[in-house]
Image (cartoon, rainbow, N blue to C red):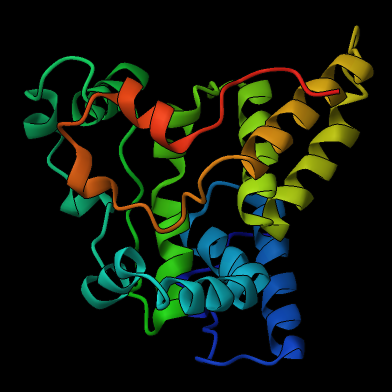
Amino acid sequence: MPDLPSSSLPTLPENPSLSTRLRVGLQALKVLQVNPTDPAWGALFYDSVEIGLCASLARDFSLHEEGRHLLAERPSLKASAMDLDALEKLPAGSLGHTFARYFREQGLTPIDTLTPPKNDAQYVATRLRETHDLHHMVTGYGTDVLGEMELQAFTLGNLHLRTSLLILLQSGKASQQVPGFDAAQYARKLWTAFRRGSQSRQLASFRWEDHWATPLAMLREQLVAPARQWN
């Protein structure tokens, strides 16, 4: 199946029905099976799967001051809004300095949101995608395959995202084909990450932009449960 041009990208209405979400999500999934890194189709699939949960999160945001400010101001962490040079000049160990070095050392750039969110639910979905790498840093999970799966398990416990569950299920099937794969150890690590996420502060409404100069170690203590084993 060839890559589809951006002009063929469907759009979700503001309050899509379940049938519409399924239709658009399946269309996006077919594209992602061929080109899994396509940002536009990836965002569309995420929105199709998570828009109901994101609408619920937006309602929760409206109940507290931090969330209301996010919804009213809609700050963005997309690439075009970031100044990595300025962040890298912040003190070593700060969130901003670590964030900038994280991208420099791995040769990455923050994701760029192509379509502005039309409503609060779409903004929350966009926010979750844009803060993914910050979640890596505050939890300490790496960007290798195991680290990514641990973060997905943490996110499943913290936010109950369906996409995290789908990724974990797909990864589990693929990992079983790897020589020397230890299924019991893998399951323990994911269970630990899930429990850690469930006992941590809900990260979706945290305003990272207000804490660029805050030591990352301090944020870890405030936001994330200690990494430990659960039986």
